[in-house]
Length: 207
Image (cartoon, rainbow, N blue to C red):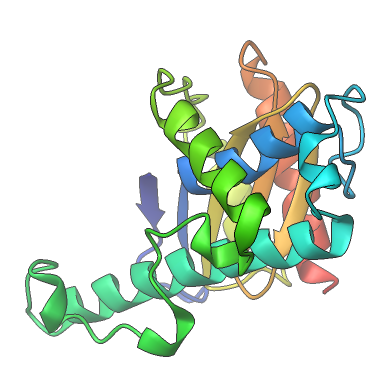
């Protein structure tokens, strides 16, 4: 993740902005596309094979899955930053005060809470997914214009994390208090990615 920070001594409230590709949320979105299940805002892909729906995956279950994944990784990120601010190294993990009741951030399939055939199918798909080449990440640093624009938004959080995932077209979703998922085609130009970030932040400010 690329991270940018506003001077905490500025008259404008402190602001931290990070962005990057996130395989943890890429996998559930990839499953949607493969299966054909549509969950807002990821509704613009083809029908798919329907295999996961046959095994019990539906929109409500999928939505809870991705929310859990985002919460777990956001909590881990917050815990690492808090540990570093206390003068601790981010490793080993036992020194990080992570809320264990949230579950293991690395268990992406387990975050769904499913069992039986659906869980087995997803774990097989996850092994297949992990063998893929990592998708490219759009470069948004540029001249800092987007960072300044976001930092001046009146309703933005003090920390904003933007997670890019591969998708057929640009879509955005918000996960309060500080996370945005932006789906974009792999060959999307920089301005398309920025459009997705702006829309995600607008959604974040209204939830």
